[in-house]
Length: 194
Image 1 (cartoon, helix red, strand yellow):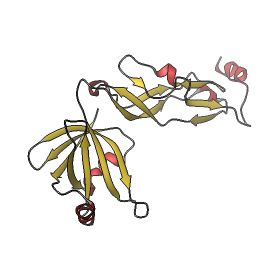
Image 2 (cartoon, helix red, strand yellow):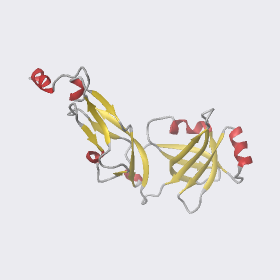
Image 3 (cartoon, one colour):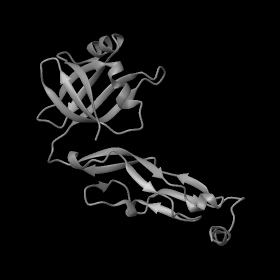
Image 4 (cartoon, helix red, strand yellow):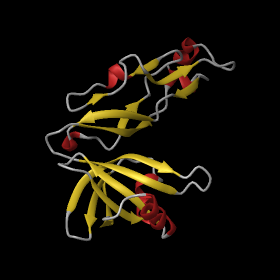
């Protein structure tokens, strides 16, 4: 899985006044959970650009000014309701033997047979929650939709893997091909291919 490095400064003062001063200086107050005790730090707002404003999933290497390093994933992020600036971020420290849950993007490949026949693609889940140990976390879940006809659905159950599990019910629909007004019969499509 891809990794991003964020440079941070350990925070000694936590509270409303200190937090407001950090935000005014374009710094984001952050906390790392999952270790022996939570670690409070701040990082430059621009450091989050490659982590937040991308469809890809990343792990994060947090390097603090005192020389400590943490491998983590972004657990939660809060935005200002008016300005949309990042006002707080929570990270979860990774342990190579402890499974974590993370949102991973879904990528469709191929051209579905049902789309050629005039069907409509319904992409219900562009991201799925995957639970695995950090070494087994995938960059993305790839689905080949080429054999799908009109009326076919791809469920979470069909994406199961030994390396990771999903935090969704087995009958959750990831992608479906629906009928439309200009759809033709699939039998006509088969005759054209011969």
